[in-house]
Image 1: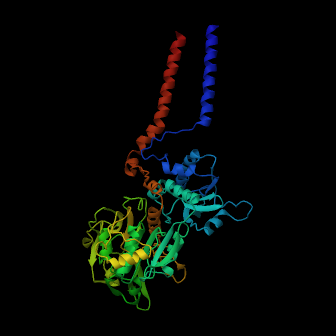
Image 2: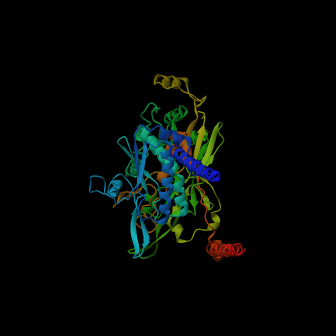
Image 3: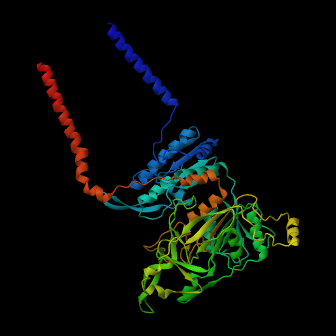
Length: 567
């Protein structure tokens, strides 16, 4: 009897313990992230942003339904991440996965129509079904609603129909950054002010259309004539110099110098040479020559020099060339055009982290020079098969009649974009007249010869990188898309837009948010050759071995049972 009581008491205690564990689990939730790259851990800055939410956030993720394998994996990763966000402020975050084909509440309109109206670009994929092949529009976007404000997040920024595992892995790694940046913008809706410099022949026509569209969601962009303004106001967070054509005066350089030293941020997209694709449409050759912008000494003082040369690369975009036919009916073929290099990210900085190929046109090289107190980071550089062409240089369409001599393309990692950070020294230190200093003081500007605090300057040796082509039929094309390959099998939108946005975000956003771009998710791919070689062994190991073990254990058990019963 005593044994029975003890037995029942044990079961009762076990049941009570089970109930206590379940009650605690309902109120206390934790997990242990044992992954090397901390895949299931969010940063302290992201937690702070989520905890600042004082109203409900509704997140709609349009990755639901019959999706290709890669996007199913992205949907699963997004679900895991949003669950992490919800754990940090469960009462304020609501999310769900829906199909873009679903109808919106109280409307016959589908979500996909609204998404396109908000600027979403779907990916047209060909998927395999039982009946054959079918084209399917994928909207890899999340729609965030907060206090009457709406934001779209592109969960996958590639536009290529052939999606690689590396691209999808990169999209997963960028989830925290994209959500943290967007939530922070919703909580702090004031847009940073940007100044687009004019007065030195900078581009202001339809070629800047996509630049304006790209920055308008997160920034307020104004034009600023440096020549006419007495100084550059510090209310502008960033000054953009995009492809100036005319010579800078010393007065203009002094304004730029003092703006930087007083804490302003600058991005320069500069063509040191006059070399335009339009000229090749008039005649099959042109001579590239120095624009003489008179800005070399200013950049040199800060730690960089744009050279008067041209960078050619075997990793490059396509151009149509006449390879045969007659004058009336020429035969065209798309060939690589070495003057249109493509730059692959080295992933050495938050600006170029998980960045795709960036397209350039008639690019110069950059040298970094010694500047006390300035750190230099190469953001973009050439491939392992590149070369430098000194100027004045003759650029001819006839060059592509023969295959380029690969032996000439033996230089590598030639810099074309560099980030300079630190306390800059003025070009005009000990060189400026007292009357000029007094004149600046009357305008409310105090001349300084050293940065008050750490400044940031990005120098890119290509003025066309952030401009767009303009088609006679389609109008302005997206930034990073080649007019000549648009609508062909070679069409591709390169990551120029992402590079510009990353530069602006690094210069204007909180550093803690930018640091979330550094998150890496290691892509661990199987060795396909070894898998094929060891296929039979692993099939036996996973299928036959468990069955054999089960049979052996059953036979042994029966034998033991038989002996026990006979005894």
